[in-house]
Image (tube, rainbow, N blue to C red; front, side, top):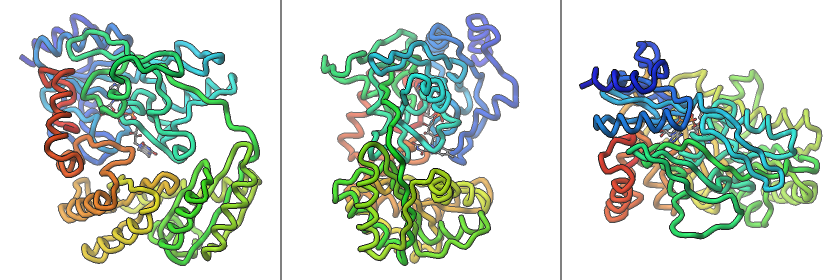
Amino acid sequence: MDTAVIDALRDALGDAVSTAAPQLDAARADQSGHVSDAPPLAIVTARSTADVQATMRIATAHRVPVVTRGAGTGLAGGAIAGAGEIMLSTLAMNGILEVSAADELAVVQPGIINAHLNRALEEHGLWFAPDPASKAISTVGGNIATNAGGLLCAKYGVTREAVLALEVVRADGSLLSLGHRSVKGVTGLDLTALMIGSEGTLGVIVEATVKLRGIPTGTVATIGAYFDTITEAAAASAAITAARLRPAAMELLDARSLDLIGAYLGVDLAGGAYLLVQTDGAASGDEATAALAIIRSLNGRAELTTDPIEGERMLAVRRSFHPALVATGTVLIEDVAVPRSALPAMFAAIGEIERKSGLQIPTVAHAGDGNLHPNFIFDGPTVPEEVWSAAGELFEAALALGGTLTGEHGVGILKRRWIGAELGAEQLELQRQIKAVFDPLGILNPGKVL
Ligand SMILES: Cc1cc2nc3c(=O)[nH]c(=O)nc-3n(C[C@H](O)[C@H](O)[C@H](O)COP(=O)(O)OP(=O)(O)OC[C@H]3O[C@@H](n4cnc5c(N)ncnc54)[C@H](O)[C@@H]3O)c2cc1C
């Protein structure tokens, strides 16, 4: 059977098919730290929509599972392929098919790297706003399939807000055109929205019409503020939101994070918490002044700058978070989100879980949208059971505060065992029925998400 599948792929796709051991091994892992039990059957590096269609027709004929993969930077294990599966890479489908300045949109293939698209858009004065921290290494197709967010999404939206239309290859190899080029459009059910964040379980995205914005003008103002406690810093960020200010970025780091970053950068970052606020656009100056006043009224020791180099220095503290953690061990990055007013309560819950478990959980939050990344650091490749147990408590705490298991990284394999706790049995069953409509044979990324 395995040979028959590989032969059929080779006949249809020639040298787009690889069974080379190093490539197969690489397909077993993404950036989640999870590794599949065995290598997949083959890797197809699609060069065109026709290649994707051919792969799906063969997969359907042989009932073989297909795992679609962009750049493999996912943090939930969604793009990992295992025994008996085909990995379908869209990385080589990386063209920009159209940029329309008049309609503020671009039509792209899924494998284009987010930052490469933005570099090409600069000459048009336009910008694709979704900005995951992985924008230099992740694909637009992967961003859409995970509904990626980033530092700027409280003001500029997550990927969902930046997609107008999709071309999707279905499990049987047929091609669906979803959505529209117009700004508005409400014909029928919104299947474009259904695809966004579906993590390769409903179809393969082969083309996307994405919504663009003008590159923001005005002076960027940056505030770096230290607080004695994370609760004070979280309260300040909640107050900035409640004051109807809309910083482009608002990031919160706790004391454990500051210790690790300080050691990594070789500087003393004294403080119990750090709040970084960045404003842009026409109202940037007024917003920054108002945010500074709120921070100072809530005991923050803050500096404000409009100097780009100084602003970059303040941002570097935040940017160093992930490298600082990775330098000390294996990192499990968690990703819960709560209503913004519940940020102080969520930080308190994390503190309580640390006390009970004896684990350290350095946490950074996109405070502008209530998305927290509590991190666990451990030795070796496997997540210890006590870490999963503490992570489970984190999820329960987020749900109890009206939040969610995952703000932006997705469910993949890693959060599958908790999905029922958020959705409930009835909705989970409904979602499985919806998947079955798109994927009656269960060959699209099985074992992930649902
Ligand atoms: C250092 C680092 C920082 C990160 N920061 C962020 C962040 O700030 N915000 C954030 O949201 N994420 C972040 N991530 C996670 C990751 O980069 C995002 O989830 C990203 O959107 C994944 O893109 P990718 O191309 O690597 O997709 P992959 O990892 O290859 O795939 C991710 C999922 O999408 C599916 N998929 C990929 N392409 C397609 C397609 N064409 N059609 C259908 N399904 C597809 C896969 O099956 C899989 O389920 C970070 C990761 C790293 C390593």
